[in-house]
Image (cartoon, rainbow, N blue to C red; front, side):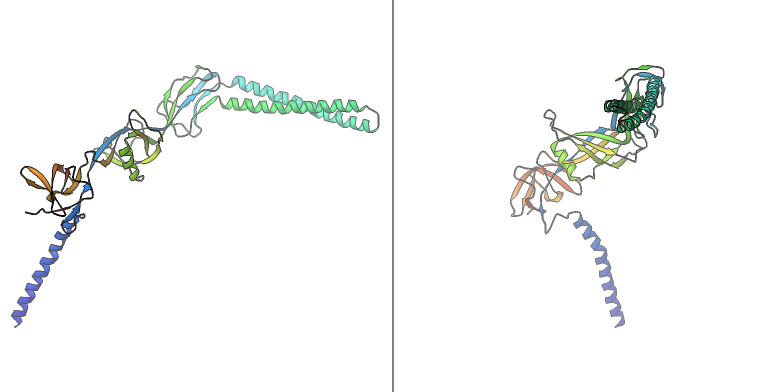
Length: 347
């Protein structure tokens, strides 16, 4: 009796072990076909991957132009240099503007002295008019001279501010942290107002412009800011970085029928510069109208491919190729996305 119970126990354990190890196989097979239920599936729209290529450039670019005339006395940054915290690119000679400022300040001191004198004269004549020892017109004349001197002083102070601002503009500056990309000025060279001195760009973030078709643009919008760019030339195998949408042009180019979209990347690259090749992969609807079906749902008869509808009707399709995860791409005027078919056709 004990041997019989032991035999039954061994058989039961064997069955349980076989059942436990079989479950993952079932689960794996079903997980590969999550859209198949009870042998019925709905056709899905097929997509194709397009790869767009763009090249990095500075996020912002600025022309450096002189607003004043003068002789260049020094250049602080050359091509490829990053501008320092003060943003100085080059400095023009300020000798003559310094002399004009000094002359202005001397004139201010002269007027301040004259105003002090007119103030004393005005007080003295007020007292004489009160005693009726001087005419009112004399007091009015003195007061008018005082007012005119104060107006002249105010004008000179305004002129001083203008001269100081002009002297400040003898230093050509760019935003701190930008890099010089072009330099066309040398120390000792005469610079006229409006002269182009070079270019600078902001390479702390890199800009990648793309021209997208309406279908590609719709796909990018569905990503909701999760676009990724692959840089195949970085390292041995390339790297992939997250990209942000910098701006989208509201205009539409009628000639190319494209929409201009700018993406940006920040950190992650070994060299932040222009000309780095980047690839943007987008999954867009297949323009041929193909659909995606499980590979086993396609049957071959008489050198043709067939699908079986849910009601058993046979539909001839053109097999375009195999897809991912044991799927097939087929096309037929009678097959649309969302229509239901059987995985196994009737024999």
